[in-house]
Length: 361
Length: 187
Image (cartoon, rainbow over all chains, first blue to last red; front, side, top):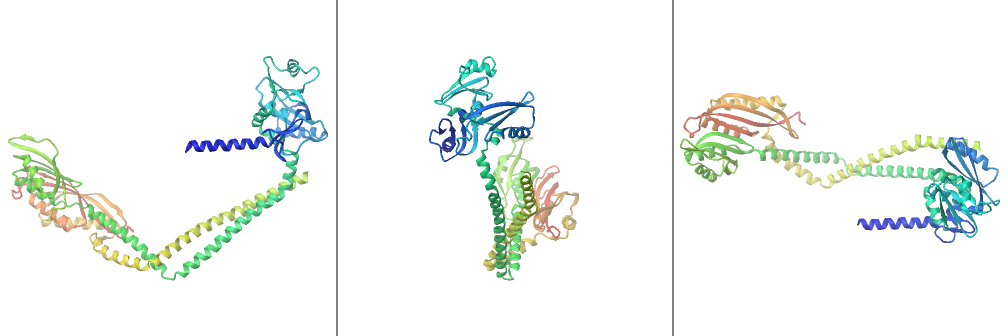
């Protein structure tokens, strides 16, 4: 059962991953989904290839993320369509990265999120790594902190690029020919702030347009739900009250009678319980008589929870036990202690259960 | 831009106020109505049930009234615990006197315990000394005469031995018993 559920769960997860991958599109020299298929008419995420933007960085001493966002928005307004990323606070500064489109307009389709390729891959890079991403149209270098250079001129060799980027000794090179797995890994590691900034203008505009109808729909649904519930409750209550009236005036008396039946039944149960548990004591005297008939004497008698304990002396304790066994007023008589010889007589302790089968004298 | 933001904030305020002062109270009122309806439905079901089984209910009630009456009479109806205790003490005193026995000890160990519904009980312990045959008759009178008395523990300590029914041997009787009664105030 568990293994079946596990298999079902893995199957669902794998399908979901395939669906997401088919809805993530990399727009490089051509557009292609990360699942390997042709781009769908709409996508969840569009990743802009490095060849479509210029990258620049700026450090500002602003602690509040919202203030940094306001500054970045102002600065990117000069070039419409510019994407930006706000890095974490490092040594009192925030690092802003701007991705300015090379063309007047992004060569993009319809999507909800829009992200630059270098930002996504840099999230997947290990510390102190330099990646060289090569594809047919372009090659570029990308450091783990998100800085990138298109390969060319003096910056065609990894050593020089690492030197230019100021990477520490011990850096290592990652050669990436197929960026798709790196992109998927990087998407999982993107911080929430990056997703907030990646909301595409088209999606934001759609949301602004749909906000009114959506809100109205929600309000209408809540109101309709409350009205329907009110109608149901009122109608049902009215119907129940009418049904109750239709039963006639004797209902009250009958309910009282039923309550009395419950009460009487409970009383009967209690009385019967007390009388049933009442174990009569009188069979005790028959037991004493049986002992005396054998010539025995009694030195102590005790009855507790219908268990009779007899202590006494007789010439033969076994004879006493035999006599008690034959007496119907007690059941299961047994010696409760060892028989001891004392002054020519046997001392005994016998236990038996009083039984009510003996007729009352 | 500022106008948009003001509009958005105003709209949010109106929405929150509507939720707080209209939707939530309305919802609470509906929850109360639903609970009242549930009670009404149960009442209707019960009422329909009793109307459908009218003959049966009345017949069972009459049967139970008849059969319970003699059982209930076994347990005297007392105004309270003190009255019931006094009645038992008086009854036991009568029996002791009738058999010429002297009371060594009488004590209420537990009083006024609810045994269910209107039935209650109190527990007493008693000690007396006498000839064994007299003690046997005393116990028989307690058992047969006071049906509401249930003997829980008994011990008979001969002084020094019981050798037969008519030897005149003396013994000390210790008794722990419960006395059941119906209390008028228990309901």
